[in-house]
Amino acid sequence: MTTLKTFLLDNEEKLNMYTTAISKVHVGNHPEVHEVKALYEEILAEVKQEADATALTQAFDRLAAVTDHYEIPGDTCETFAAVYQDLENADKLYRAEVVE
Image 1 (cartoon, helix red, strand yellow):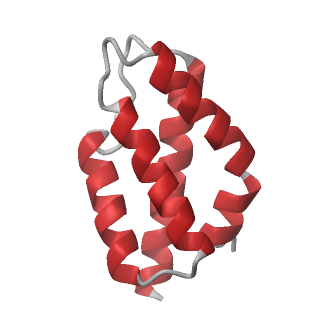
Image 2 (cartoon, rainbow, N blue to C red; image 1 turned 30 degrees about the vertical axis):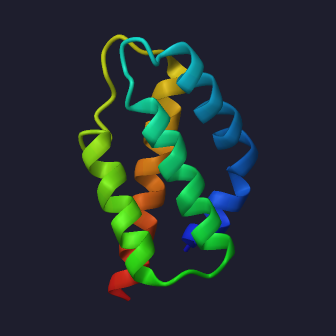
């Protein structure tokens, strides 16, 4: 099974590029993309530092709230959808690891 850390590190370059792109292109209609990018960066940093579960749980809870549980708006592009799908996958991996 893929771990959260492996998933994020394997997708780091893509997610860095995509979160930057959507925060430039979609901010007019979706100002939450700036917070999505910041939360992604916070989660990545926490994972790299082997952070405590409380910080990650709070970040993922906030990310789920900000994205309306990773609901992809109808007026966005494939890049936007890919970011939300990858972040939802990361969230699921994290929550599965916490339960174990």
